[in-house]
Image (tube, rainbow over all chains, first blue to last red; front, side):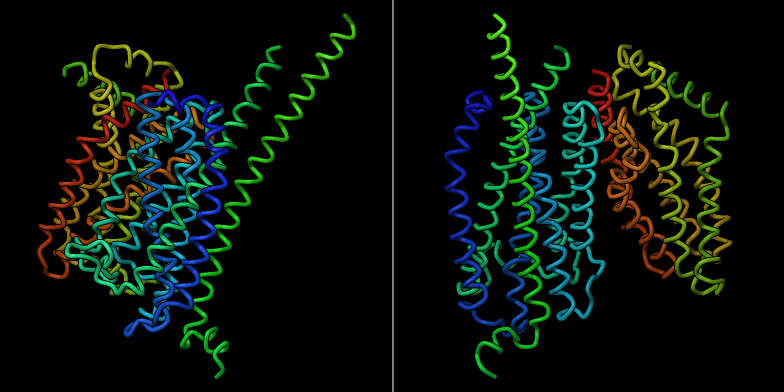
Length: 240
Length: 64
Length: 221
């Protein structure tokens, strides 16, 4: 199973077939989600129009965690089975996850200013997401710090796995500590606690971000494979 | 207030709502552009290398 | 087990021979703390309020300073390879080196901390908890730091990179360390925070040697 996708040439063909689909899906979902988020949904009776920020903030925060989990998973596969494509997937995921984490922090700030009266508060959820952001930066820095790319990949993979302890902390921080950040209202025992008119745009944006992740991941993976080929050709030349 | 102005006004929170959406789209767009240029740069470099290979092979066959 | 003890003794001997190195961490610790009254101003009530945080942050930075050399010298002169080939499990080697590192840098910090607390006019109620919290926190930081120190072997700009990797992981220790001292000063129970710090230490003892050993192994391949 693994070896069917291990072959980069096969992956290049598969990804070429998938790319237009992910691109199209992303655009359709994004347009539908944005339309519902900005026009087709009511203002919240407590938060007013600022609730619309949630339609980008919450999916971005989901993706920040999702990307890190994917990165850690791919790192584990890369470490255990020495699978080159898994290493590349982990490396390609890092910048995407960084962007989503950054967006979650910035949009959260823009929501916090009118609602809490401060751009930033030091509660458990915000602090642990900030740590996640630094973990992403550290991962990328470590990846690029070695002359030998496989050493960089393996060191960074170990870091990704060590940093994974942060993910459950972020996930449950609002339940463990009674902090300012409000608890999850979508994933909850007994069904989501928000009205379908708000849930629909939220889920659409979440799906759009997921397909965006797949789309850019495929692009970056292709780029990594091509860059690897260029490096191999140059190396062969140098050794004549 | 006409509907369009009130839409941009966002109940007084326009200064917070619009930047969030704009920043999100800009960051996602920039990441996509960066990934695409990364791919294109690799593809052109590979193509150049392959063209050089073909050229040197041609020279070799000419000499033969 | 005896071999692990020998490694520890060797590291301790090496550290004592170049005594300046471990002293440097303490000097840095004292200097960093002394900067605060100069920067924030000498009002006693403000200093007393921030004392716990300042001491913890300075301790965190000081214990990070000497981390870079935890494996670096052994890596450079090849003795790390010998240690990896020896029959002792690499995890145990890591643990021995971490204990040596803690004894040479962590313990001096704990000794210096009460003096600095007096300088910052910290409430006397917090002293015992400060020492206990540092006693639990500094070994945790040495353990977490060993992972970072092992990861950066052979990397470019290792020192800066190390701080980027390790500081985010130190944050939980900092949060609960300061919370424990502040609770004691405020007349609340410090126990829950100290329990969490012990939990962090136990978790670090269980996980960090494995991660460090794994990264040491791949750096030697």
